[in-house]
Amino acid sequence: MRRFTVAVDSLLARRVQLGEDTSLELKMPRIAGNRVRGPDRADLADELAAMANGRGGTLVLGVIDRGPEVVGLELDHLDLVEGWIREICNDLVRPALDADILKRELTNRHGDCALVIRVDVPPSLAVHESPGGYYRRVGSSKRKLSPDMLARLFQERANTRLIRFDETVVPRTSPDDVVYTLASKFLIDEPTTDNLHKLRVLGEDSDDNLQLTVGGVLLCTRAPEQWLPHAYIQAVSYAGERADVDYQTDARDIRGPLDEQVAEALHFVARNMLVRATKASARVEHLQFSERAVFEALVNAVAHRDYSMLGSRIRLHMFSNRIELFVPGELTNTLTPDSLHLRQSNRNELVVSLLARCAAPTGIGRTRLMDVRGDGVPIIREQCLELSGRLPEYTLVDDSELRLVMWAGGHG
Image (cartoon, rainbow, N blue to C red; front, top):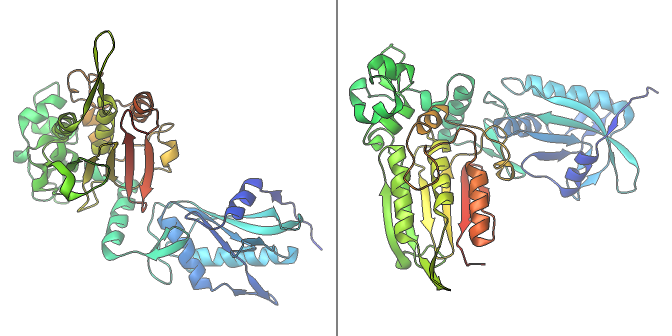
């Protein structure tokens, strides 16, 4: 009998104990003679493609998902199963999957080592089709992509490889749509067509005609909603702690260039914010929310939202005990809600670079709207903790929207 050297994977063992989730799938192959009889090859191809079309994931062969229970594979079956899964990746998924197939050991419930095969599927730059169509991983299962979601995924993946969405040109625009008083803030020289092209506010379409880019529309026109009707902030203030139209105290759709949206949204929060006063030797006012934290959150929202998601807008909801900010788009480049304060990744490089040239509101604590060093989230955490004693909460909603909760001062 041949001998194999395999590694004990303690981290994988812990993940397997917790069961299937968005990034983990467990399967137990059925083998008869020299063939793998199950699970169904087409179904497994769908699962692997769904991972690649999402944020990636891991398939472990040799584990029953119920329990889960580590059963393991026979030593003589490892090469057979490895070849079988490689054929699925190469023959049943288009374009073929570039997955890492590894032999590993896990401890079973009896404390013995069991052999498994680990298949690591990275998030792909392509969109993968499998026998059942186009899928994406949601929770511990796959979900077939609707036509609009599929179109958006193709656009997103194409942009990742070639050009970012905020640098794509917007149909039915021309250099005449640029408001030069807005564009001049981004340039040292005159805002000529050549200079705006170098700044990427203008770009060429397939016929070499100059048109505004998405970033140009968002920051160099008075009414971006004329071309991008979803590019605005919906702001609502409620008297209580829940979204009840009967207790709605203020509401506004905030439109215009992104830097003006930030200023107007900040003004909306200030206008609806409660101020609590205490008296010691002198009157001391206590703000309900940290203005600096709200500012940083709004700037991050307009800078990093996914503008390719048609029909989705930024939502700013104020309550008596918290602010909730909903930002369209999943997190980019393997970021997670827990790592936002440790790492940075820009979805919209052009928008970020233009916002970094815009002046910040007076008294906010910085001179420019955007800090390219990525200090926004750490500042939000610091300010919220100091005011309310609680860290802000970041969560992903359906892998398509980031939700931020900032708690009010004096509330538990």
